[in-house]
Structures are given as C-alpha cells and as structure tokens.
Image 1 (tube, one colour):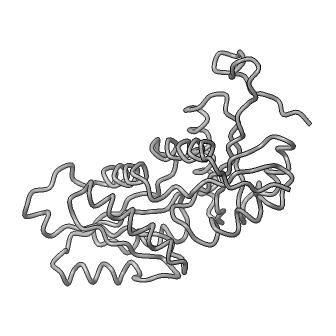
Image 2: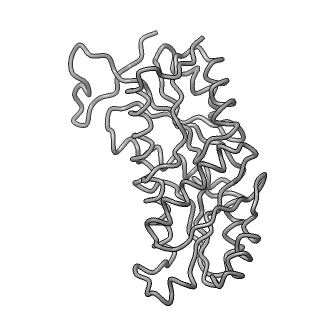
Image 3: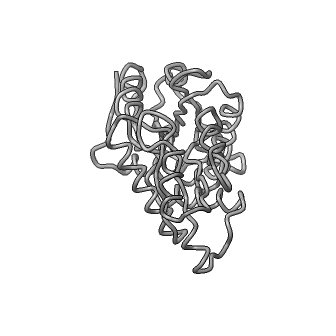
Length: 262
C-alpha cells in the first residue's frame, strides 16, 4: 500500500521531487470522559497542521475516546510514523503502554519523549497563568507572599515526579516565586496539602498552574482547590504545538531511534 502525499501549502508538491514524504505525526492522547478533552486535542492537532502544512498529522487515544491508537496506526498502512505522547512527564503510559501498542501494530513507528519537561512547556504554563490574572509584575512585598502550586495528574513512577519537579523549576525561573509540584492522585503531596504548607510559610496568595493537556476531572478538582486563581489546561496553546513538532523532529534526528515494528 502506498500512502498518498498531502498537497503543500499552495496545492503543489509539499516535498522536493524524489524525496519520500516524512513520517506521519501521531498525537497520542490519554482519553477522557469529559467531552472537552477530545475537542481540545483536536484543536491542538489542527494547530500543529497549520504550523507544518503538508505534514500528515493524526490522533490516537490510549483509552476512552475514538480513534484508539491501534486503529490510527492500522489506518496508516505502510506509512511510517512518529508517535508524540500528549503527556507531560514520564510514567507507565510513556514507558510501557504506548511502546507496546506501537510494537503490536504493522506500521514502523518511533516513540517520542513526553512533552515535559521543556522550556516550551513552561512558556505555555506561564501564558495560561497570565490569562488567568497572574500579574505581569510583582513588587518585593507581593513576591514574598506569592507562590504557585504546579498541579499534575501524578504517577507512582519516580521519573514522573522528577520530570514534574523540573517543570516546576523552569516555571519558577520565569515567575520569580516558589513553584511547588502537587498531584491529583498516585503521588504526594496532594494539592490541598501543598497549599497548606505554603500558607504555613507565609505564602497566602497562591495560584494553581494546571499542568494538564486538556480539561477533565483531575484538572477541575485541582483548580477548585485554589485560594486565589487557577489557570486553564494547556490545550492548543501555540507553545504546545511548537513543542509537539520539536519532539517529532527530535525523534527523527535521533541516531538510534526507538523503533517499534512488527
């Protein structure tokens, strides 16, 4: 089976004659019962397409939403793919579930790293905080009473916590105030616990930065705990689309790519 090559921005060939089309980019979302999650990841996929006209961009889910990843991979036929997890840290899905689903498919696929930690992720988190009302500038007095809780899903994998701590440090460097990681499940501290600890240190004006790709139960639960302001999930922010393409390109350039092939 020969994959059709999508037209370029002007309707002509998107790639130089004689060169094969690049691998398809498959965004791998977790899936959610919240209908806003599917709308959000579709919007992110659309933004990636606008940034890279001519690149075949597909969506597959680990669970709960269609299309599921195996169906997306089966539909690619012989077209190779790079799978970019829309996950913000390492964990079981990144280390086991996605590689195993890729290995079971006919298509030859490379699995990219998760989106975090990375400066572009911190850029998106910062932008969402500004949209929620975070002040553009903080005086010294306000800075001493202000902090951020970086709310993430949580995982029992210690690498996941290490990645989230790194993202918190990147965001703290941008904001100039403490940023404390906290979790909705499976890891500690929980968001309310982190908020109490910050209050005990005199940090009474605390924002919750939503370290979630899309809306859902965990994101809503963490936002509801905020005593001040809470940012929206990262969604289809332009920095997220740029980060997706960075992970795609990084995986293509790798000398020893992680291959999953039948």
